[in-house]
Length: 356
Ligand code: ATP
Ligand code: FE
Image (tube, rainbow, N blue to C red):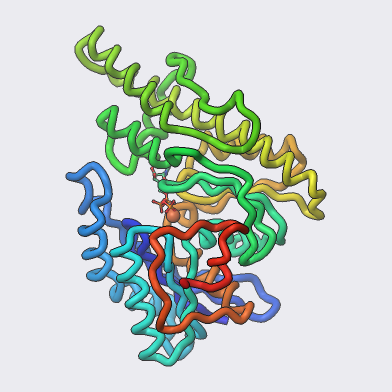
């Protein structure tokens, strides 16, 4: 099976071709990602209207590039997969319209994909991971522990009750005047910093369960910054590095401890080949990865983290999730609609109905 995937749910326009031959491993034949960081730089965040317009402009170029890099024509494609949600409505609509156009024009089946399923199924694309596995989805808009039992069968063990860690990294960068996206710049600054200099809170750590919270962390950071500004009239490079390192240490500790608890719940089901995977943009963070790897080892589970290019938004994961759904016989028709909100857990029957 060969599937063309389209992704446009946030600020990355992406197209990719993924193939899996019968009995073979999945192959990423091409993965094109056109970012929009420069377009939004002046606004300190993603502007939905600008994002939607850019997706409209870039989608067909990305599709063309994905096909030509794969060395394939549309006639060699078996299905078109597209992110139908969750995300920004304008971008989702642009992607869904484009996918419908391609599917109708080339007479191909259409498969709507949940963006979060794309992230959560990535370890199956990269490592052929078997169900059930535990996955921590940690990105710009989400943070949740999911028990992945099947392509369309996810149980949520807990998640953030306010901000997502990626968002917290981005806000931290904004507070300290570092460039967006904040994850990579805060991580880089933290390398020269002392993670113990500022005692930032570890929200919800004292409470049982797998829920997390990150908004208090940002407030505490803001307070430390203002205190320094008042005392010294500004921030030194070292202050910035120490604030970044202290922030990163707090996020890491909270994620590690909650992962320990989620792993305990997962291991209680005695999976045959226990595995803990991390997915989403924040999984690119080396300190967080290392801490989660240690937690997995402690619990006796294999640890998986995708390569950086598959952590942040991409269309290979969408093509793959589409391929997995397609293989199960799932199809969507021209009534497929964009769903800005689309939770990925057992409580949501939506996973079974594609984009509806
Ligand atoms: P979602 O998948 O929840 O809809 P999204 O698509 O915006 O959100 P991703 O593209 O998966 O999120 O991840 C982007 C986020 O990851 C940003 O908030 C960015 O700051 C964060 N991020 C990227 N690299 C790093 C890093 N090295 N350390 C920490 N955070 C990072
Ligand atoms: Fe994402």
